[in-house]
Length: 242
Image (tube, rainbow, N blue to C red; front, side, top):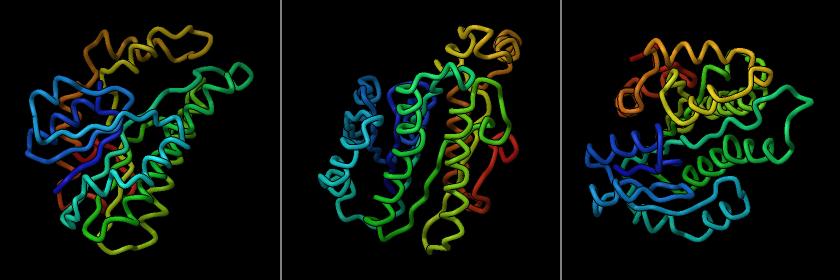
């Protein structure tokens, strides 16, 4: 078994990487920055590629370079793909959204996961499990989060469509991990009230200790990813299945 993970350098991604590596699963991490602590802790298990997932042209060139094939090494054993990297994008009403932030959010949150998923489906003949890290914002509308919610909803529907394809040896799920205490939550709490009217709700979650730790969320997500239940529903919430 091998795994690919986007955004492994920090936050939930770093916790997911640690969880997979701790179980002895060789991992290829894709992010702009490397993770020196994990590389030192797991020599020979962690492989890294420095990529800006916002640059679709660069990502396509990397996919065409054969480096994924080098990592797979012709192994048709079970392969895991975790599309974890994501950004909030512009947190603002429609008329206050920056065009570059919109483009970056769509590239990282939607284009990169879809390109990686298709590339591995073409290359890997064995069992493939794809986990899109989704969000409750994909299923409920929040003021100021139209871009983030739309991008995560795209992953939900991608999972539904891929599941409907009925390909043998492929399981997929867009999984909402709950509210996890990461840098993204820090940014949310620092946002101006006029751009995100529900900010006080997220401040209260932090103050009342109701945020999941990245480690706890990662452990539960990987447990589910490796279980026989994974893929039984294309869209799921970790809080309802853990």
